[in-house]
Image (tube, rainbow, N blue to C red; front, top):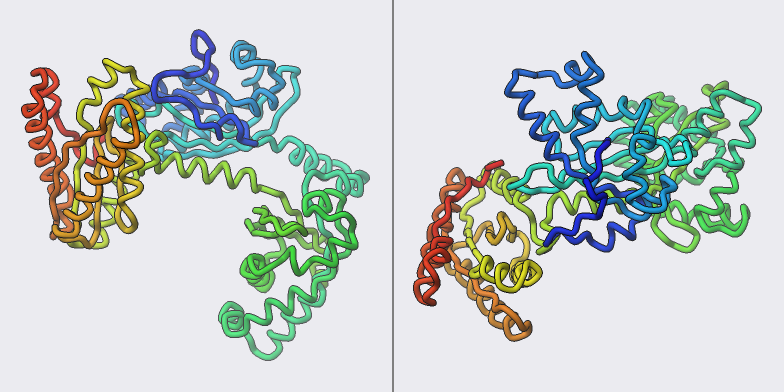
Length: 508
C-alpha cells in the first residue's frame, strides 16, 4: 500500500485523464495511484539478479518500507474519505503515516509479490487506520491500467471494509457467551438450518449402490429440487430480513422459492456434491434474489455445527451481499481490457487476441490499421480536449461498425487496429468502406476539427504470420498517411509523422 502523496496533494487533472463518474459514485473506496517508480525498482532488482522478491523483502524489513515509499497517491474518491474519516484528500494525504502503519506492511508484501510475478491484478487483506485511530480490516484489490508508454503509472485499487465482519468473527471465537448476540447483530445474513433429511436421502443413495454422485445428479436433476425442499429453516437473524428486503420472518420463509430461484439450483447441486464427499465446511459465490426480485451476488459459507456431524441437524449458513464488490470487480475487469477514452479494447487485450487467434489456427484474418490525421496539430492549436474529442469520435465510429467476432482496439496514442477473423479481402473492404462512410457522417454531426484517418489493410491466411500481416497493414497505412500530408501540403515536420518507428505488437 502507498505511503507517498503528490507534492501538491491535488487530484490528477492531466489532459485525457478525467476520471469517470463511476470513480466518485462507486460504493467502494477507490485509490488511483502511480506505481511507476516501483516498476523501475523491480527492473533494477531483476538486473541485479534478484529472483525471489519475497525472500529479498523478508531479509530486511527496510526493503519493504522502501518499496512502500515508491508509490504515489494520485486521487481518492469520496467513499475513501468517508472510510478514513477525512474531511478532504489533502488532509488524508498529510496523515498517510498515521493511516498506513503497523501490520499494514504484512499485507503489502503479498501485493508486491503478485506484481513481481507479472500479474496485472492483485488482491489481499490489509490493515489500515482511520484518522481517529480506528483499526480498519480491509479487503484490497487492484488492477494495473494499460499504458504502453508509462508502465504502472495508473493503478486502480479498491478497499472493501471488512472490519465489522472480522471483529465479529474474532468475538465469536473468543466468547461463546456472545454467540446469540453475534447471531442477531452480525452484518451478514445468518441462517440456522436442519439438513438431516438431506443426509438421510444421501445415505439411501449409498445403500442402493450409487457411487458416482455427480453422474447421478446429471441424470436425475429433480433430486436437487427435492433436497432443496427438504431443508428446514430453524432461525435467521434480523440482518437477513434487511438484506432480502422482507418485512417479517413469515414473509421471508413464505417466499423461499422466489429467493432461491433457478440461479441457485446449480450452486446448490455443488453444495450437495461437497456434502456427499464429506466436506462439512465449504464456501462459494452464488446468486439469490430479494423478495422484490432484485438479483444479489452472495458469498456463501456453510458449516455443520460441532457435535452435529453425524446428523446434520444444525447447519450454519452465512450469506454476505457482495453485489457492490462484484460490480466494482466488473469495472476493474473492464478497465483492464478497454481504453477508457474511446471505449475500444486496449493494446493488452489486442495482443492477447492475436495470441488466441494464433493458437486457434484461425484463417483467414483481415487486419485494418488506422491512424488519425492531424491529431498533433489539433492538440497544439486547439488543446488536448479537442484532440480527445477526435479520439472519442473515432471510438464511436469503430464501435458502431465492428461487430463480433471482429475486434477494434486502440493500440497507441492515435493508432487503431481492426481484426476481422474469417474475413477475406472483399468483406474486409466492405467494413473499411463502412468506416469511411460513418466518418463522413460523423463529421457532419460534429463541429470543430474534422475526423480523418489514414488506413492500410492486409489479409493473413497463415495463422503463424499474424504479426507480419499487421506490419503489412501498418506499412500500407503509413504510405496512405504520407500521401495525405503531401496532398494537403502539410509542413515537413507533420509529414514526418507518416513514417514513425513502429513498435512490435508484443512490446512492453
